Every structure is written in structure tokens, then in C-alpha cells.
Amino acid sequence: MNKMKKVFVSCGEMSGDLHLSYIIDSIRKKDSEIEFYGVVGDKSIKAGANKVNHIKDNDIMGFVEAVKKYKYFKNKAKEYLKFIQENNIDTVIFVDFGGFNLKFFDLLKKEIPKIKTIYYIPPKVWAWGKSRIKELKKFDDVIVIFPFEKAYYDSLESSKKINVKYFGNPLVDKYEFSENLGDKILLLPGSRRQEILKFIPEIVKFVKLEEMKNQKFILKFADKLHLEYVKEYNLENIENVEISFDSIENLRKDSKYAIATSGTVTFELSLMGLPTIVVYKTSPINAFIARKIVKITYISLTNLNANKEIFPELLQEDFSAEKLLLQCQNFEKNEEKIVLELKKEREKLGNSGVLDKISDYLIEKIKESK
Image (tube, rainbow, N blue to C red):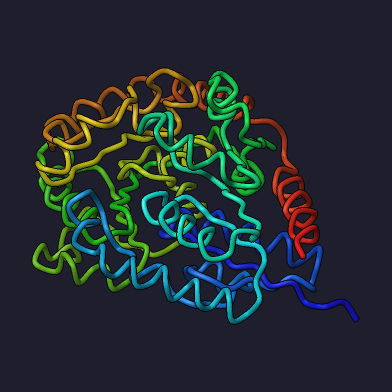
């Protein structure tokens, strides 16, 4: 009987957990002798991962909140290191969440220099600047999921020593494209407490506009507990709003377009052919810092990959009921054109079978480690 291979995984939020769960599920179907332990969420746990810590404890949004939890993350990194040492784990897979994972990586390599390290969905150096390139060179493997990321790394002289792989986008395997649109507007406030608190007040104003009174809305929450954050708004009593906890795949069938907090979900919607208005609001100080640091024209992955605006982006002060109304009126006139653009963009991401390619590669790398 083969000896079980233990792999530690470190992700930090729901989007990373989603991507990680697909990988764990695919690998476990191919090789039952590989076990996963680490920082995971419900989706990865369902796929077969063993929880060392749950990502719900990493609920932060913005620079200020991250500083406040510095001591917590420092202690967690030491806890994970101890677990890895006590369980003789020789491979660690990092998923997104660069602020923590790069610091954790430094601690790990200092204490266990020969441990194999793989970064799946690395920090967005094309957004935050090239300073993290130096750190990424230290990883054994880096796997990106967008063609523009691979092109970016290939264009940098400083990145030539990074083993960057691109197999396609794994979400292509998970979501079916449809040109059919429903008659409701899908509202997606995000999964973090701060995101929901910024989203709901403006959305309540929007759905109560005179121009919107005959529209039907679906307000989807990721968890029933999230309703507690905004109970003061009595969302259940707004006549034209239906609250749902269903999957976005099911809700997409009844939707004509969406209004969504920026994140992986907006890209998922684009793969399903649903026009989306991307919104985002954070505290004034976080917004100030981001504008000084971030070096990109767009924030949504759909627009970044297309290198043009397909999804309107309403950020900070632009996220208002009045501007949402204007964008919705534009969608009503141009929905077929937008769906066609989304279809073209999906085709650029290649065919299905991406998860098989990624999992095969990871199994090979895991088996190599001693």
C-alpha cells in the first residue's frame, strides 16, 4: 500500500476556497493517496480537505483592517508551521491571499528550506507593482489562470527565472454559457461583512426609485447569517425584492443582468453570459491608499482580460442609485451586444479540460517531493 502524501493548503477567502475546492476534488478523484490539510472554507472541506483553520476568521477588507489583524495572522502562521513540521508535510500550495501567504512563505522557507512550494493564483503583481516578483522567484511553481497574466510575466525581464504555468481558466469547466436572459435583476453584495454593509444601503435606495418599482430583483446572500449584518433595512419587506440563497447558476436563468460587488463572481457571471454592473465601495482611507498603489485601469477580471470595458464599473462615489439607474437603462438597450462580447471573451479562454491539466501537473509535483 502506498504511503499517504499530505499536502498543506493556504487560502484566505471565498474565491480562493472556490478555486481550491475544484483542484482538491479533481486530484482526489485521480489519486486517493493524497490528503489535504490547511486553511480552507466550506467548499474545500466538502471536496475533502481537512480543516486546520477556517477562512471565515480571515474576514478582512482593505489595508486598515489588515493592519488591525496583524498579530492574529502572525500567530496563525506560526501555528500552521508547527502543524506542517509535526505532520512531516513536504508540499504547500498557496492560493491567492498574497498579503498573508507571502509572509507565511518567508517563515516556512526559513524554518524548512527544502519544502516544495507552489503558488496557485499568485498575487496580482500587474496591479500592485513589480516588487513581489522577487518573492515569487523563490517558489518552485507558479500557476496563473488568465492569459494576460502569463503574457505579463513573459514580458518582464525580471521574471524569467519564475516557473510560470498557464493551462487555461478552470472556471470554463464549471459554467455553461447561455445567450438567454430572464426578466429579473440579480443583486450580489459579496461575502465579506464590510462589502455587504457598503452595498446594501445604496441598493435599497436604488430598488425604491420610481423608475424601478416595476422591476423584479433577486438579492442573493452567500449565508443566512449575512442578513444579520443589515437587518435594520428590513429587506424581507421590500415588495419587489426576493431574497435568495440559491446558487448563481440557478439564479442566472431568471436574470437579465446583475449588479455585483467586485470579485470572482463577476467573472463567473461573464462566463455564463450575464451582463453585469460591477460596484465597489470601501472606507475613504482604504480608497485613498488603493488609488496611490494600484496600477490598473479596471478592477473586474472580465474587463482586465478583455483590456476594455465590457462591464461598467461604479467605484466609491460613483456607486450611487442614480448612476446605477443610468447603467441599467443602457443595459436594456444593449443587452444583445453585451452578451455577444461576453461570448467572444469566453472563447479566448480555451476549451474545457483545464482542471484535468492543472490537477495532473500538481499530482506530478506532489509525488516528486520527498
